[in-house]
Image (cartoon, rainbow, N blue to C red; front, side):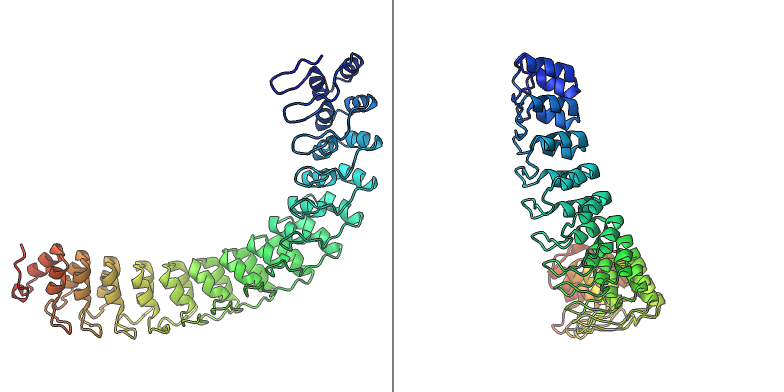
Length: 471
């Protein structure tokens, strides 16, 4: 009767696993070892409880089986019965005095296991037997918290009915309400709020349940919280409001819920970043339009005086650029360096944004404080499509930087042949000199850009300006 398979299971384990009570009693009568453990430490009693075979469990208990014999992970038979939702086995174990507070190696009690898996009947049996409703796992999570996190509303109600502490927090300061909001469990949120849970409890970084719901895009939980009077503008310690985090994550449904509730649409983080700014930066058109519809300040700039339109252009988000232009955003608003949205779009090679701005009448020749214009910076980066868009709009081909460098000069210096050819096709002056008397041909030759040299020579550049022969 003690022959074991490769996993350490004896015939008694097998009988318990399959619920054959008569076989269990027969083997016990024949002296089978009721404490024989599998390789993972599971005894026959553990196996019977895990599989919900209460008659087998009672037979073992009647024979004096160790009701606290735990697996290697510290889980006792009561953990198994609770974790798998076998109420009859739970009652059998409790009737024989099983330790209802036994903790596994993670610190989880049977009540925690029942709450984690959503077995309301087992939860109520344990609570009725006086189980500690506040027993924390090693990571400081209570049974109520885990029930909320996993969305088991019936277990949440059972715990609250028994007086569980709805404000108990984990090591990070998260309450059960934070946990429910993080996973989007609206029913649990409403149950907690109905029981009087603190709707504005802040975790260690200052995030409220509303902030957590917004961060994860759970609009239904947000509505429940706002309906209960949650502070819609409560910021965390980094000055981030629920509206800002919803915009940062592109949660447009959450954005509209907050705006509908009257959230401050222009609340800025340190640095001057507003919800509209961050939406434009990340390209969330739906959030941008929602904010504009609500009257957000479209000219609110960061500390560097970059507006939402500027940042949308810098990052190449055409749809956001179009939304901002449709709303009348200032297309000439310059940052602290005198750089405008068109320059920013050209700097990144974002031709769709360039075309949108040009179509809206943006100044194609506006220079920053260093004298650099959109055409110059497009040539600097080698963005031929932007160069051709600007030239097609009539940009000045020969406007020079403060050092005398023209767009053709910088294109030649950087070796951007396609830009060189576009400029030459548009009639750029190939003999214009910088303050050192260098022409574009000098710039191309000195940097070894033979293709640009050939393009210039073919266009008629004066080869005598370069002292060395170029093949």
